[in-house]
Image 1 (cartoon, protein in one colour):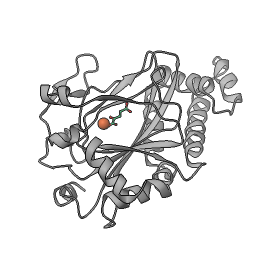
Image 2 (image 1 turned 90 degrees about the vertical axis):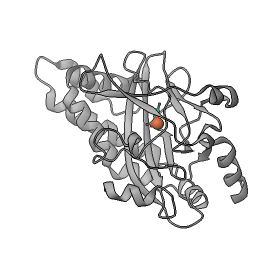
Image 3 (image 1 turned 45 degrees about the vertical axis):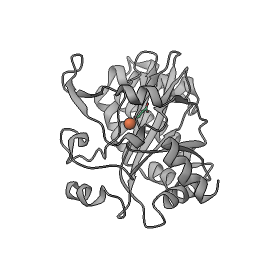
Image 4 (image 1 turned 30 degrees about the vertical axis):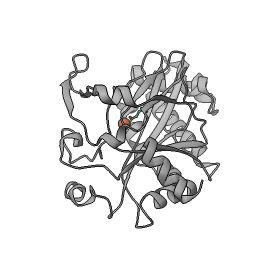
Length: 272
Ligand SMILES: O=C(O)CCC(=O)C(=O)O
Ligand SMILES: [Fe+2]
């Protein structure tokens, strides 16, 4: 794609698919995830719990092995499961991945070669079919810890800031993936509501009632990409999670990128 194609496509659809240049960064994320899972399972293993050591013997990164480990951690050791998320989200393996030549080159073109900053990054691990946390339609925000409730309510345009979304395992209709409304970013920032979660009392969720004109004008597109590809999308693009229906693990990562030339930058830095 030429620079012009990249700018045109982003303007029209609000997202782009990028092929990774670094062939090992995806595997590095899975390897780190596996190491942490092994560590936490080992730490929790007792003589009674022989099944832990059975699982631990395997150092392979296939779906079944990773699913068993993450599932056990989630069900029996929820606190360690969230420790694993937090560590992996901050680890250099995710930064390394975001530093992929093709990802950074594309961001440089989108930011008109000014500069690029990654202001937040995290991973998510979804276990389908039961524990696939599906996000409803929404636009993104910077997810900075100081934006205590939700950055969605701060008066920040997000117009020319971007999310990089990457699956490190498969991401498709059966294991779960993401769906976007093509061109919805051109409608600007939309009004979201922050609702109390009736099931999990400590968390809340964002709700966006997609305006009829967007439903009418924007095509639904389910993102089915392989794990050597990422999606770069405008933080104003309306998107949601498609939950998986077959047993398996979906490990994904996201990074929020902005530039000093972005409209949102001046306001965003107050939260750093
Ligand atoms: O991974 C997904 O299904 C969607 C993730 C997402 O929308 C987000 O993290 O902002
Ligand atoms: Fe999102």
